[in-house]
Image 1 (tube, helix red, strand yellow):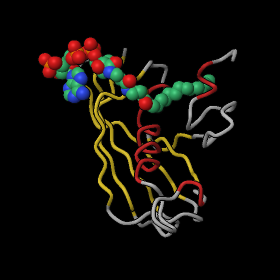
Image 2 (tube, rainbow, N blue to C red):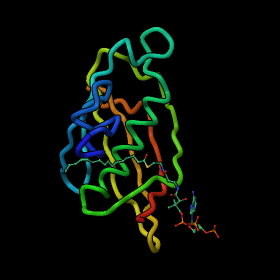
Image 3 (cartoon, protein in one colour):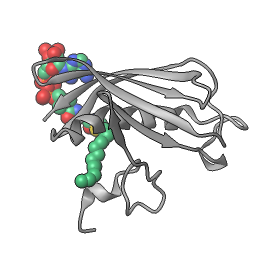
Image 4 (cartoon, rainbow, N blue to C red):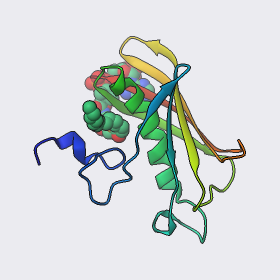
Length: 128
Ligand SMILES: CCCCCCCCCCCCCCCC(=O)SCCNC(=O)CCNC(=O)[C@H](O)C(C)(C)COP(=O)(O)OP(=O)(O)OC[C@H]1O[C@@H](n2cnc3c(N)ncnc32)[C@H](O)[C@@H]1OP(=O)(O)O
């Protein structure tokens, strides 16, 4: 295991059971897409809330990592607004809301192709 970061569950290229997400930045928003499969579900056809939280955690913390910071999540809050279906492309977005010292306040969301927001998040991300 030459590069431990390449085993990140969400973005690590080498993780055989990882989600293998890739990312881009647009208008000060960090963006990724993911189409969950049946292996990611909770109830039949519905994406597991833990995976939803994982996607949101990643998009917010990794945005700061991409900006050159070593960032870890200190606090994560998720609002599950509607069931998130499997088998459809999801757009995951993260942005910076504010900063107090070494703590960043972040926001995230997951949207369906028609723009419906199924989950929203807030996080405090610590720079270490
Ligand atoms: C080139 C391509 C390669 C790509 C390859 C990339 C791979 C790379 C991927 C990166 C993307 C990863 C995305 C996932 C992100 C995770 O999943 S990170 C893993 C989960 N998180 C953790 O493990 C963090 C564990 N916690 C900690 O390490 C420490 O508690 C912290 C957060 C650093 C804070 O520790 P600390 O600096 O010692 O601060 P502490 O003394 O506890 O608190 C100081 C003050 O900060 C504030 N504070 C601290 N914690 C909190 C909190 N939870 N809530 C509110 N206030 C707080 C308070 O004001 C506190 O004061 P008091 O209220 O205690 O008086």
